[in-house]
Structure formats: structure tokens, C-alpha cells
Length: 131
Image (cartoon, rainbow, N blue to C red; front, side, top):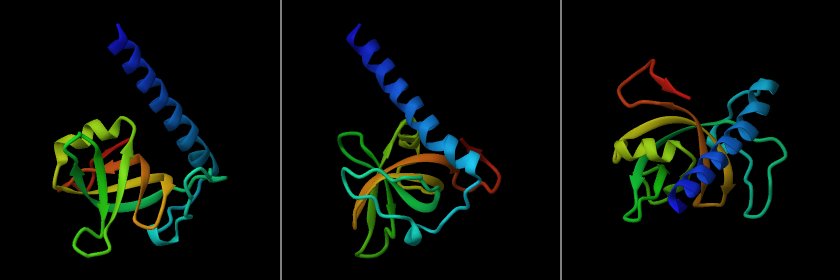
């Protein structure tokens, strides 16, 4: 029973995050911005208007099952962003793959942060998208 309630709470939170973050973007018709131009949101701060950012990243899975998107994975200055929401479970199948995503930053620091994936383009496919 506790497990079912926990899953329902997680599903409700994911639905709330998706509708609250994605709806204003599509309604406003915002343009995508490069990762370097995305606003930095410090821990505890809330962005006034979320921006959709295109991100090409390597999928890494931690021993505890956390899913991270790693930007600049070949350099010493790589950045790791934890995936929040339902897409984290989906990305478990793509460990070590490079994926093209459209994300909204929930939290962002110099070297890390957390993101919600709005759109995912699968590796090796030009037309497949998952929303």
C-alpha cells in the first residue's frame, strides 16, 4: 500500500512539473536558446519564465540508480545534470549513449544541476522524438 501511494505521489509530481513547466513555454512560443545562454538559477531561486534549452549529452547512471545528462563529457570541465521526472526511468535503457534533448533547468550551478526533459531525440534517429 505504501509503495502504491509513493508511486502515485511521484506520478502526480511529475505531471505537475510537466504541466507547470511546459505549458507556459508552448503558449508563449519561446525560442530555444543554447546552453551557454540559458539563465543560471541558483539553489532556492525560481526562474520567472522557464526556457527550453537544447542539450546534447551523454547518459550516465549512478550506482544508486540516478540518471544524469553529462555535457562536455570529453573535457575536464564536464557538467552533470540530474534528470527529474518520468524520463529518468526511460533513460535507464540508454546508459553510455549520446542523446539530443530539450530540457528545462530546475536548478543550475557552475558544474551541476537538475533538469526536466521536455523532448528527447533517440540516438541514431533523425525523426523519432518522445515528448
